[in-house]
Image 1 (tube, rainbow, N blue to C red):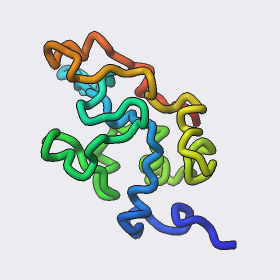
Image 2 (image 1 turned 180 degrees about the vertical axis):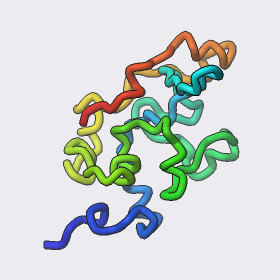
Image 3 (image 1 turned 120 degrees about the horizontal axis):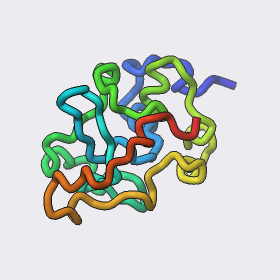
Image 4 (image 1 turned 60 degrees about the vertical axis):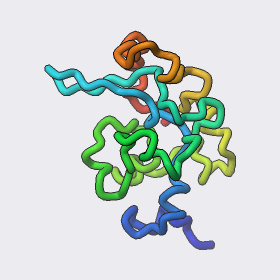
Length: 152
């Protein structure tokens, strides 16, 4: 039996399909974040991007997201290191750091629901940025607990 692609290929060697399949569907990267100007600390909130589907935990228009959300960051094998705010539980970050995929990851478990069952995802815990009167209101929904690794 051959080992799965994520165990045998470096991130930059993966096909686009393989790369995209690594997304664990947690939704943590789709949250509004603020950076503390004094400390540089990145503060996640419980506010999600206007394109985020909070039930499916996916982007509702992934292919065209940059058109509607110009500051949406395209994750690549070459920019993971610079994106320190990426959650430690993220499959891309885990593999970049030489760690295995978590047991709840769909490529390991065989189910896209295990990320939610393990309590790693933001499903049912966020509010859309469209519901806010002012973008700064997102600070009222600060979620510092989402800086740490979840569902190891």
